[in-house]
Length: 342
Image (cartoon, rainbow, N blue to C red; front, side, top):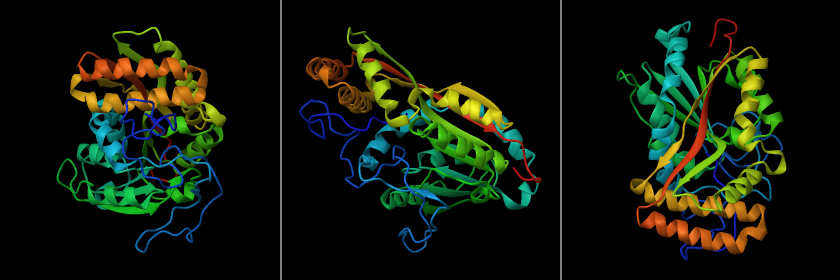
């Protein structure tokens, strides 16, 4: 799920008001992880620390980009992300991997775009057999450090898993940048891209014959129990916020299906909802603050009513009375192999 960017009120939401940013204890660094906006291409001189290779044609942070997400927020949502991801999409992926030329000797090479603290690798690597080399891409060196340190070291069958980091959010990959890649993965990425950026991503993956597993894209639907008269208006404003400035928001999955399909890929989509109850109260409270905050940023006239709404919802959450289903979609695009490679 893509996290709302900004709202009003205190940043930490400690007063129960609408927070200025999503998630707890935000890192105040220009630019955002998966929600950064496109800028000019970066090069190997982009300032990556020694030992990190810069990614080909990186997305640059713009002066108005929102702060990055803090590791605490990413850690808070990781169990819900793991429970939501569509494991059913892994079987066709395993079939593709089993037929890779040279798989036995070379293992898998997996690019994780906008990796954050590496939750995708921790979920996926132990579910796949065989040696794996993960290339983790993120613009934030702080998050890259977390991802590299906490990455799994063994595959499902005990084979070795290795990791390298590349600083930068990949917005404009080319087939050459994916040479030798077995898979591209990402979480909460599609819905913060434009149509042009999805076309570029589809071009790169299909041009390289590389499958793409793109998870946790917002679907534009939220169910809250018990219901509240303001639910629909908040949800509508949030969806409008997700579509700001040309971003696709809830339209992203349909756009990606079309883009990959036009390029000859076989595309499968599976629901991957967060299902939040009393056991996920801390995550639900943080999500509520960001969800309502983004809605108010989009439609400031909601502010007064939204404050009362948020107080009620947070009280229900604390009392164990609130349940939320946040709908997402996972997408697997199986590009046609090119030149004998996947």
